[in-house]
Length: 98
Image (cartoon, rainbow, N blue to C red; front, side, top):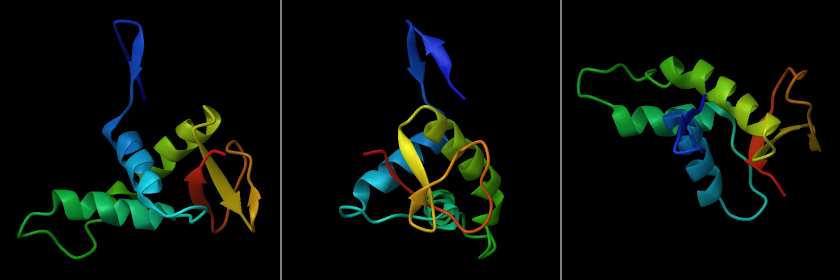
């Protein structure tokens, strides 16, 4: 979600994490929802957290990825082709929009 601040939209922290993670990969490489959720979880991990902490962030990553895809900032890839952000299922990967 975005908030209006001085007429400039402010991205959700999860959306920012998605964009930063995709920006860090080489060339046309892609990442999964799980890859990004794991990166977020590792950044926020506390000593008492369980190894599957990343699952807590999976829904938020999916929601923000759909939002970013609808605004043409990233692409959701399925079987090597760009998938419709409004109607996709199965195993997908994310990449920065070309």
